[in-house]
Image 1 (cartoon, rainbow, N blue to C red):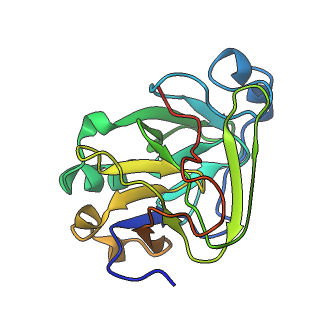
Image 2: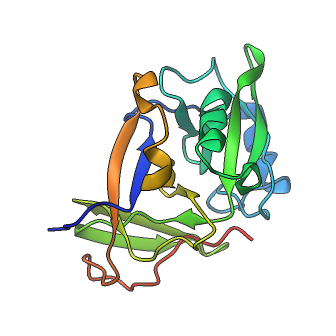
Amino acid sequence: MISDPPSYIHLACPSGETSSLAKSERNLIADKWACRECGHPVVRFSPIDIIIQGREPKPSPISFVYGYGIVLVVRKFVDQLIESGISAEAMKLGAVTSERKGNLSEWCTVRTQNEVILRATDRATFRKCPTCHRVFYSAQGERYITTDLPDDVSIATTDLMGLLVRRSVADQLDLDRWSALDREPIHVESIPLDGLPVDLQCKPVE
């Protein structure tokens, strides 16, 4: 059992609230930003512009592009994060376009310098992409991280396609404003509870 107050809060969309990459983009992303094997980002810490199928994600302020490791966030929510103390330079924002609706100006892709795996307590397994060596982790139970973010970092994207923010930042956010937003307390456990190596990490965003 994990105890003591959580150091972080994980913010994510409810299950099923995702977007799909436009079919016209799927054969092009490997030349732009994605691994040819797993389809996840391999470019340096920089914005990624995408085209999605259908309309904008609703109703959560956080969504993601299913299968491609791209987090989508409502720009007004990004503004709230900045007002709560997160540096604008800590996030690289990219454009989101819909095949049907054109430019979705209310949405953006979000990348952070740090990308974190949320560990859990039960039935943990992982695999590595043979090309880019990104770690794909799966587990059940209460979630945690094994290493604190650097002192000057207050936000990170996660392998579960959400945003991990320090508790001090989350306390300043008006989270009740958003009707569909999962919030999960995350502790730091220096000794893994899943029997796997402590240094298990996503491929760092350079």
